[in-house]
Image (cartoon, rainbow, N blue to C red):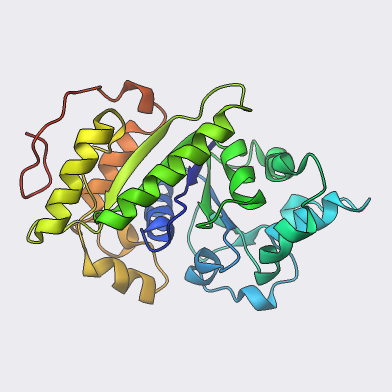
Length: 273
């Protein structure tokens, strides 16, 4: 069971969209996918039609359990979505209080990996949709994962946010047995906007060896898919952004094999030259 975190400490860069779209593509190929919503805002949970405020069990339940003697079966927390091969561990707003509750408790970084371990034979992949904040939930997701995708909007402030995320990753790697391999995924790319082109060039120059093969273009169909609470690949597999997510999947599980190239120029369509 391969675990993948989708994380960035800046909000609005396409984390939940990336999580949902990858889940749709993987599920369509026959893989069994478990989504884990570790964001107290619950965007991923809401995407699949669940109301975070009304759920009895959630990711929060595992942290409650860690402070008591009650053992909650993880299967009791799993929510079936209406899509084949896609299940969900949902989020609730109470998760926002965890950092305050657990500030003096050691060993809280492995709660999620331990909770999910009984499902090792039930799913092919686990995807963590992470909150845009450094805290116990992000540390848990990074600690459990074998891979990391960092979506970065193609604009200047988002690139600055990437540097903060990489500092957090370096901190996590110091306590992991093996460094967590990662891929930087440019998002919301529009070749007609010079600021986007410039931002993509900057990413190429600084992170060429870890950059996804294609940027995700600005695609209104992603918003339409969100409105319909459906992964875009299940609505329109020919949508503009789908090719970028398919290309991303070709490098996941082997991001260390991405070529370490010298800085290259970027054409207006986002392709390397």
